[in-house]
Image (tube, rainbow, N blue to C red; front, top):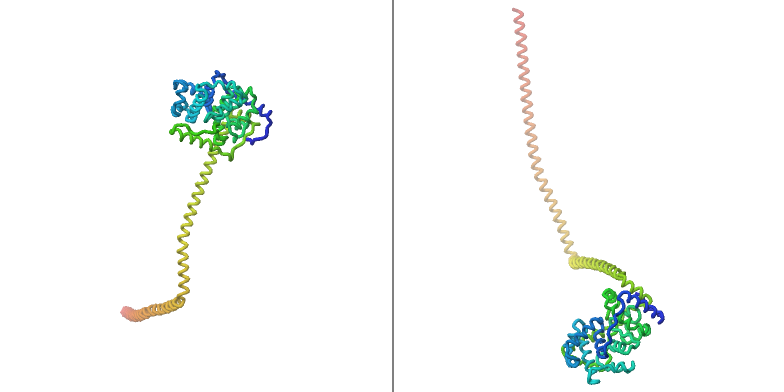
Length: 420
């Protein structure tokens, strides 16, 4: 999207010719329609607003076939006339405009003839059509263009949005201002063809997708009827619809409205027709989806971090008062009872000393007892060893005596033997 720049009228006319050729190559030449009388042209202008010519022709045919004549349609209710425009979101408003137009023509001539407009000048016919209640600028300009062949460019809401996207008009311009701005760009001979091709462009779904993305309908200036006295003459059942439509049309936002340049209008429209803009939109959607996923992940991580931080703060808050209370109690105990602590400490030391003494005494007593027993055992062992040694000595003495005796006996025996 390029910001709007100052472009001369001749440059705009050249760009308009290129756009007409580009749209004619895609949609073909607009078909020639049979001329209608003045009243049917007015009713056709009401029906074709924000729709296609084929839909307007079917609606006009249903109007003629559904009622006996225009007088029956004039005295019918808006809900009955609304059935003619069943597929149109503005069916109630169009039914009201059809009834008020028929009522104005009947009150004017007591017949349903409006052909005298063809014999009037542009100013007179325009002043005459401004008297019709609830008639929009588009229906008035379309009727004058078809009846008088004047140099006018009627633009409904969809056509105004397309012209603003192409850069010919400002998005904030109302229908009359937009028609005046387009009048200086388009030649009189090309005005009808340009309007038909622009209407075909507004019905193209590929272009509508781009248009809805770049320039929403709420960004346009609201469309208001011409008549000053627009008190509602509709049935009570349709009053709420009319008021809701009026509120929605007046909800145009003037802030942050994009501006488009007419210099690159041909390139941008060619990109739409070639499909490159569709690919760019798909790539942009993928990037946007990826960005949203990253943002969602970051949000989840931030939420998890907040939860962990909140848990830590909660645990810190619960433990901190306990620590503070313990510190306070310890300090108060130190301040209020220093003497008692000293006394208790002294008592504790004396108790320790006494316990040590008693332990030493208890250790000494069994030691004495054990020493006496060991001494007795030692003496007993000494005596037993002495006895054993004495027994051994006596035994050895006896054995020696015996050996001596035996040796003496042996010697005596030998001597006696020799003597013999």
